[in-house]
Each structure stands twice: as C-alpha cells, then as structure tokens.
Length: 151
Image (cartoon, rainbow, N blue to C red; front, side, top):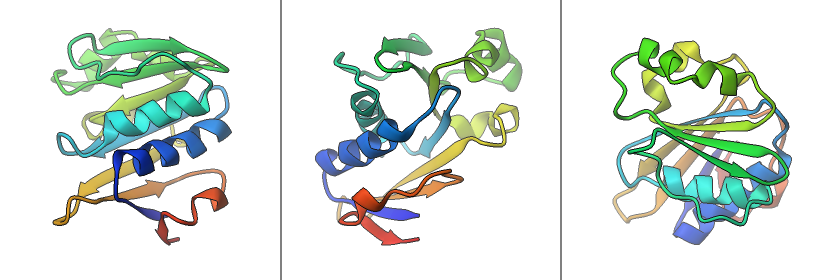
C-alpha cells in the first residue's frame, strides 16, 4: 500500500493507525533517507500503543524503550557496521519478545528480521511530501483512505 503524507501530522496519523493494530512480537522495518519521516512515524506508533512519552531518535543510544499497551523498542542501527553488531546489542531477544520493535535503517539487517516483518519505506518527494510504502502488513488500513494512493 502506498500513502502520501503532506505533513508531520499525516505521518503521525498513519503511524497511529498501524500502532493501534499491532500485536505482541510485531516488527516494523523502517527505511528511508535522513529526515524522511521514520522517527515521526514512530511517534505515531507510540500513540497507537498508548504511549504518552515523547519519542525521539535513538541514534546515540541505539535502543529506546517505551511502555504502553505493549512495550515499544525503538532501534536506530545507523551506526552499526554489521548484522553481528545488531545481534551483539541484544536485539534478537527483543525481536522475538512480547513487545513491538521499530527499527530505523533496517535495510542494513533485513536478513536477520523475521518473515512477518512489516516493511515501511519513506521517500521524500520534490514537493516535500512523503510517499510511504507499507509492505507485508497483515491487516487492512481502511481508516487511512484519505492518505492512501495505491493498494
């Protein structure tokens, strides 16, 4: 499914809609350039999971944890050099746990992620809007019709 986000609010709305439907053990692979909307989307995921805390980029901490209806493990693996580094930070325990993992720069470690991982690609358009492509999503998102451009 493809969505067009014209604002941070649109991106947060889409994240919230997806976050509301996530189940324990969900893994979200976030991909896209710097400032494409990955952390903004994760703020929405957190809202959908009932998390009140402000979500920030975990670039320097690698993993930030937030607690709501389900725990959210927000990972930023930009600074990691290999899949071995990813496993070395204990990510495997989180991937197969009872929380939700949202992984920024996941393209670096896709082979380590479960088959049921939801992939979300963020692309910045010339007009500043974002095209957000959601793949491998196990549930429909009918509430996002105002953002949806293609199934």
